[in-house]
Amino acid sequence: MKFLKKALQIIVILIASIDSVTLMSQTDRIDGPIAVFDIVSHDFGNVLQGKESEAVFKLTNKGDTPLIIEDIKVSCGCTLVEWTKDPILPEQTSEIIVKYNTKIIGAIKRSIVVNTNDRENDRILLMLTGNVVATFEE
Image 1: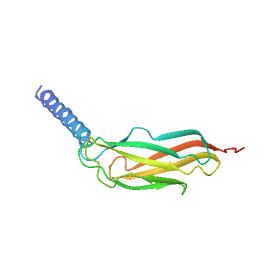
Image 2: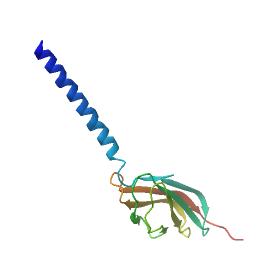
Image 3: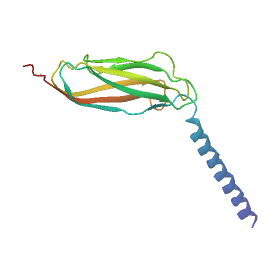
Image 4: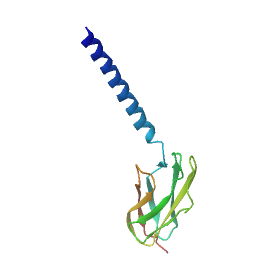
């Protein structure tokens, strides 16, 4: 009987330990910046050649320390990106403005890689799609 009682106590201690480890791992993720985009893909649809095309991606820091955009890489020189170099404070939102050169006729399929200091999501892929169609002058 003493053995059974001791074994039951050990099992209760193990279960309590596992629960506290699980809670700790869930709260650990809250520490630090968390990058959350409103959208990760923008479709321009059909765009007339030469018409200005711009997409805005909103980035919110859902963490508890400042989020920093360390770098942004584009897949083509036809894509220009503007963003703030200032840290994004917790619960604040910033915009990444992407301009596409519509002088080139044809399908748009471009990628933008946003590198941040978010430990869990340090590289975020944004996509641009659409189609540039020729303008006909009469």
